Length: 475
Image (cartoon, one colour):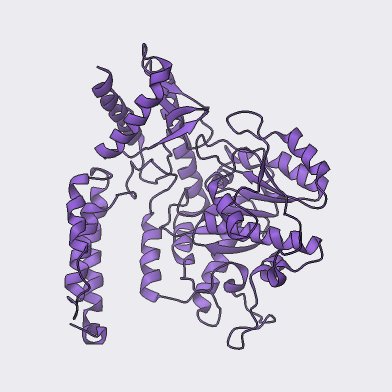
């Protein structure tokens, strides 16, 4: 084999091969381990020298399917609790296949009016779901990290303009450091965004009133009184260890009182807005200057999917475009070009799975999913609290349950090592996937429940496997 032109008649057959494998694979997710280390030997089949002439379309796709369906981490299944990620709903997965099939250049109206219109509609529906004003600008990004980069880049541009400087054009040289204030829930993705923007990974000033990281509003206000010029406040809607929230409304009050920019990182917690029962957790988010969330978390669409919303859309354009290149649309182009509203230029039509899942399940379906997962988290919390050998370390706020194995008679100085070992064995076992974290100096498990397939049986299995593993060490 050589030039793909010689195998153009194999395109439909290759896709058909994937489609035929999809049904059995998806049907197996409820029963198979999240990861089976015995399958790792298959990974060697992917290796070797680059073929000189190629092995052909169907042979290559068959090998990829054979290795992938066995050796992949089956994170789309119902028992992947290790990181805060969902799976892929049927509509979203099919929408993603359509994205690959059509292979649109999604950044410019000129290259794909279809992709641009789908993104505009998806963003409008997301603002509706999250209770954000429709006047906010928005753009889809590859992740919450890129979404935070987008929001904080707009904050940096705004801050520069407050100093009479176009930072996008002229950079930061000669300006003082941009003051960034946050509570102890600041996520590494915001630090990475600050790093990328030249503001410094560790430049954020942290105001926490306890070792859990809860924000010290009084100390933050004293700093705002002291700061010379405008500042940027970063609030977190959903902290990764416990699911706790910064008081967004109080942060919005501070931002309004001191003329600061409020950026809200709502990677998974913003989805609380979809439920009347939980929306109080994000009260005030509609007053923020920039807001972000992650689609491959609670919306359950495939990687890569993030959202960034900015109160002033014109600021997004001043931050990320235009470029003044003759072959690209000019600044006065009447169409919405998402290249000019975010950090990417080459971008796939990532709106299609988002559009598909929002249309398929609507406001009510997403509300039910969020509330069902919250109920499952509460169920796990209740099991932990009623068990003599388990200890709940923080109240269950949303979808993350922070707990540890704490059997009677084990000295406190040994409990951290015991739980670290349980976490390692849990991942090696593979039936359920939940790793460890450090919370208030304690090693803990922190399963996150966001996958649309997860049921009570999966929660009960998690507890059962944790106890089974622990028994190997403590008996």
